[in-house]
Amino acid sequence: MTERALPRVVLLDRDGVLNEDRTDYVKSVAEWVWLPGAREAVARLHAAGIRVAVLTNQSCVNKGIVALETLEAVHRRMHGEAETAGGRISAVFHCPHVDADACDCRKPLPGMIHQAAAHFGVDAREIPFVGDAGRDLEAAAAAGARPVLVRTGKGRDTEQGALPPGTLVFDDLPAYTEALLDSSREEPAC
Image 1 (cartoon, rainbow, N blue to C red):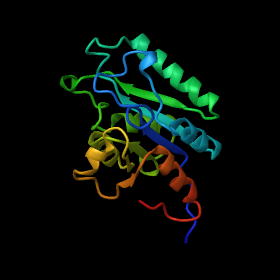
Image 2 (cartoon, helix red, strand yellow):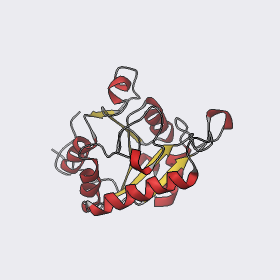
Image 3 (cartoon, rainbow, N blue to C red):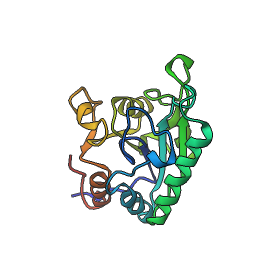
Image 4 (cartoon, helix red, strand yellow):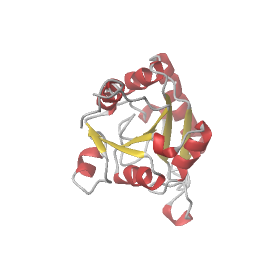
């Protein structure tokens, strides 16, 4: 097998990838619940020298359901608990807009991926984007990033639909992380 270089950056969707997805939004710090193994996966990526960023649609801010201060408090908890586990989330990009705002950052548009690529000084084509929803995969494809689907959150339903060409599919973030870190020795398996 040929040896492959690890990416410098991995982008993660938030709800359904790192934490339990809720149909009524994460409205408080108390409602933030890590998915099993997600914290440790972030720690493993960090230990391997891979920077981790989170990209998340949060229309609940513009809808008045969640105050920006609450969203920031949730993200502080996410950062702190990732660090306690030995990991680091280098950046969080969020889109507070609703579809009617016609922004370029709301997934499935690629704006947040382009923002992250510019922030880290990396070509989007070198970045995997791990998500659980079709909009995550569509954003990755539109930006030229590598789409990765996890079966947590909405992932099992998403897998039943059409996936962008080249989409890799894993049970969860820990399974993806394991395959990625093993990719320095061989191609990740689906």
